[in-house]
Length: 140
View 1 (cartoon, rainbow, N blue to C red):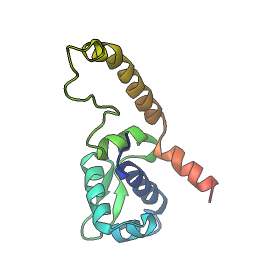
View 2 (view 1 turned 30 degrees about the horizontal axis):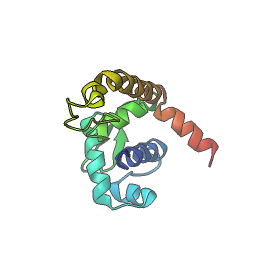
View 3 (view 1 turned 90 degrees about the vertical axis):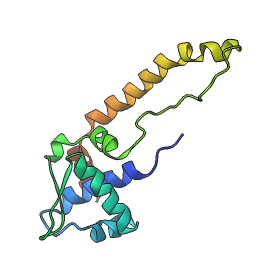
């Protein structure tokens, strides 16, 4: 299974906003140039990030700004803001109850899948936008 690119695009957006908001107006066209995607995609993701309280879009003067300190924005916040399906795994709809495996698959797998999901979310919760920004600057 693979998630959409919305999470990585959203992270790219937030890194650009954090890096450039004090230097220039961070518009959807500017972001689209950095990410190399259509500005409409950027505007859609910015809308999700704004609804989640991660960015503020200022009309009139224009541009995107962080709505919270970069030390308080985690990868989990970003992921939850833009991914509609937050679960890593989805069970097939109707395992056969007449089959010994079909009958027990949820018993065997549900707890393990939840543990995997929790591990991923725990790791994402410990990484902040500030951490990413520091690493990006070190690699420039």
